[in-house]
Length: 149
Length: 149
DNA sequence: CCAATTAGTTGTCAATTGATAATTATTAAT
DNA sequence: ATTAATAATTATCAATTGACAACTAATTGG
Image (cartoon, rainbow over all chains, first blue to last red; front, top):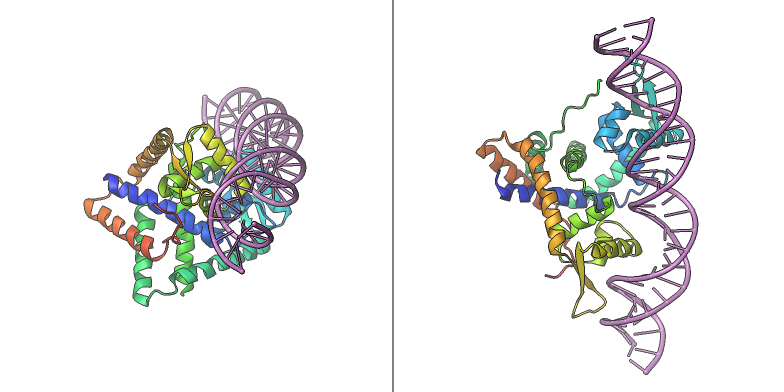
């Protein structure tokens, strides 16, 4: 692998991070901590997920994942339900209120994003979509989750 | 802007985050905390930067940025130097040892990354590079830094 | 020259987060 | 039928991080 491509990717990831930071500046949910927000975001895009899976992907210990998830449940932003086939597992989903919170958050991100790409022509937008799909497939595809749905 | 593209971008950003998480699993620097690592990563790709700029981009308060930066300086991973033209400003750079730590970290990320894209053909790698450059330019371009170099 | 602003620092306290050990309940293995 | 492994929980303590007030030093603008 050429070092140049690697540099490019590292720089790109850093930029995506930074851009995401910029985009979510406007969000600031008061009701949840940063870690809790990350969890909600992850659940939102991957639900239903198990606690173990969150723990793995977000690199948090099981005890801490469990604790934060309990807090989110207490805030009624998500619910756990036992897997009927393996009652040790809990499948986690957002509640209606959790969904609506995340939809708001995403809407606010969307607004900032619109400002960034509002200038682009239809052709350019298509190029962007194609580029994302390519990267999605070839570089940033995530390891198959062990979720069942 | 089409909602579909927005969805795609949000999902993409989430995936990049997750992939970056995966990639940096192997890194685990013992000497620095997570926030300090993020700061080092940011300094590495943006140096030289001012304290204010770090504070802005990483969304940390000035006092906290200053404190963590002091710790990094104490660990001799970065240095501050006064701007000769405006002695209120401090330009921050990695030290040789900071550079080498981050090079190691990046090398370890590179190894994981190689595993992901090792299978790709030369043509595909070129497509990937082109896609990244496109997104870089049209979507994730970051607001001009106020850094001088 | 004198306020006002800007860049950064120090100290302190509370909240969040990380780490570990011990425990329950369920399932898989022998 | 036990034993081992898995999924998750609870409790506890330390470390990190966030927030705020008060401060110094340098610069800008009248």
